[in-house]
Image 1 (cartoon, rainbow, N blue to C red):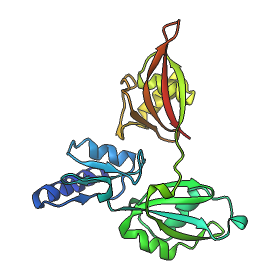
Image 2: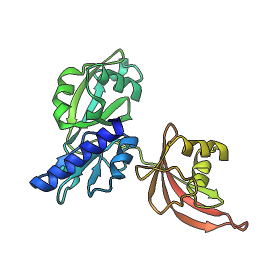
Image 3: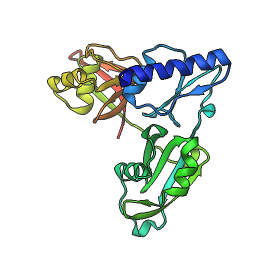
Image 4: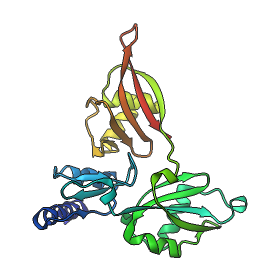
Length: 243
């Protein structure tokens, strides 16, 4: 049984357990590929990663699940002395966490702000991280749970107008990331394009209002809506691009 089959089996078991026994069940954090596989099972579920539009997410099964039900918490990891700290990157934080022997599936997104990392993780691993993570790169750090999203800063996406020939996914991806038609076609062939967390292989699919497009190794953006047409009958659309 390959990894995809194992994941499908695991997700189906969680679904059956929730609705046969009457309590909520939750997966671990899933990356975009795993999330696409799970969502393609078309089982009724809720998806959340600790904040709106998170990339790594947990799937929940049960009745009337709300975001607060998910077993996710946020840990702020900050240098003891910012003045003497290294400039810390996403890779630095993740590497230090992996060195603790932590399974990647227990960890969600890491957001960097003012040289501190805000880590979303499963509650079950949070105390272990707080007790054992003392250094990132060459910098001594301290960890504490953040009680709510109001305590942290998430960079807002940049709103931008772009001109496209159509609202096909390939046309808009090309304009957002300034890629050639062949380069965009290759992204679809390599299954590196996700719309609302599902893998998309057809470049000709049309985007709908508020679709979230993720392109592996390029970034994410939200397709907002059509604004107007130009005199040459091209389309001006609004997108929100995560930097």
